[in-house]
Length: 213
Ligand SMILES: NC(=O)c1ccc[n+]([C@@H]2O[C@H](COP(=O)([O-])OP(=O)(O)OC[C@H]3O[C@@H](n4cnc5c(N)ncnc54)[C@H](OP(=O)(O)O)[C@@H]3O)[C@@H](O)[C@H]2O)c1
Image 1 (cartoon, rainbow, N blue to C red):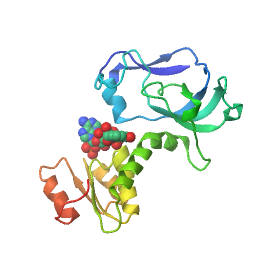
Image 2: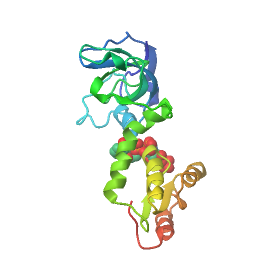
Image 3: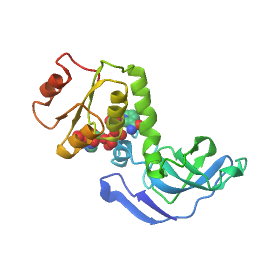
Image 4: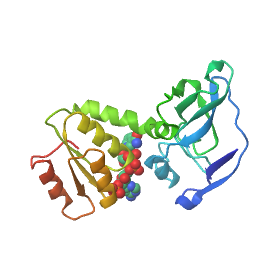
């Protein structure tokens, strides 16, 4: 199979595609034929060599924290009924940027037919985090919510969740294209955080009395 490996810590140039051996499922595991790999800001930071104290990842390695695709094979002790099913699954901190990924069967999330696999992969990390943030903040009608970096993976979900809760939502992002994306997702106002006065403009947009961020 083909996989993308990080040959050494660094910029995007250290990502190298090439042939690697096919994978086999061990006991309690499955092999997923990868259709989409989740790409997180965290992947980029680890690839640059950050957070070594938290993640035991050293080059060479295949990056990628989550995948979506179809189950190709199952290991000992796993229900063979998983074979061929559309699934999404976390892989840990490596293994996703490849045509195949091995994951524990307990990590499998069935993907409904109505959801495409690219979106399923994108939601696997950002979705639960955004829901937890939104739920714990108890956002509701009348709330004023400021979403920073609102066109990123997490920000895009938080704009939609806050708006659906009835809040007034002010988004910040860098550049017209991202500002328009945040407005299209439902933000009531958008402020460019690359402008020097952005904090004043954001405060004014939320109503002058502060906001939940
Ligand atoms: N995804 C998760 O499940 C999760 C969980 C816990 C914490 N977080 C944290 O939440 C934050 C956002 O994560 P995310 O997954 O939404 O990331 P993302 O999709 O990569 O978005 C990050 C946003 O940050 C802005 N940014 C500012 N400085 C940047 C830089 N030097 N390089 C790249 N982007 C930069 C960019 O917006 P502009 O171009 O508009 O400035 C970009 O859209 C990160 O700090 C991440 O560690 C994420």
